[in-house]
Image (tube, rainbow, N blue to C red; front, side, top):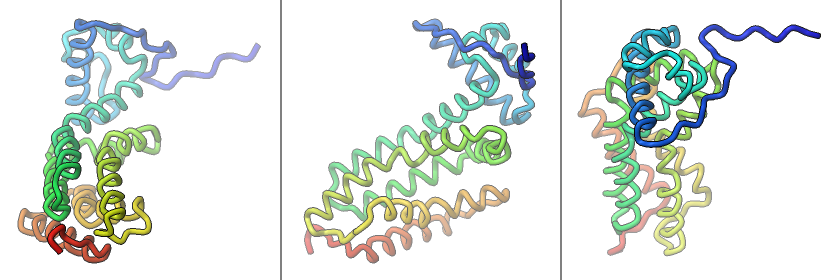
Length: 225
């Protein structure tokens, strides 16, 4: 019989137990908070013993909830993005659905994205993801799934509604959404990767001119036009 393959350091072979109820939810929350601080401080080398101690639980409890260090790591990224972008995503959906002024809605959305994604804790987590994504490709998927792409359905619905009303000429909605991200958000992510930031004046110019360029290219017509 062939020997079992060695496990990676910091991993556990067991699957996490399915723990339910308010008490389990509270424990998961304190574990996530402790792990987030530890991973930002120490990277993936953060010790599970230290995470458990900071959370006030045993290491066995951490493994019971998350099964492995890798699973906990991915959960931390997803939770951080959900928290940081919650208001931005819900506000984007509300404005795009109820506002007849796409220009104002997109500028509000862009500011909310930038404010959320340039918080110091989010910059630190993004650098951590970039440094570890080769070892854990699922981190990239978690970042995409829980990040600004969560606004994609609301953007697509608004664009398609305006296309149908002949107020927008946009042959490829998915490409347009990527272009919008590139104009107003990606410059901050690129600079953040290299440890620099864009000042508020530059941010405002990027947002105002970026949204105007976007809408001009796609022949947006105001409701009063």
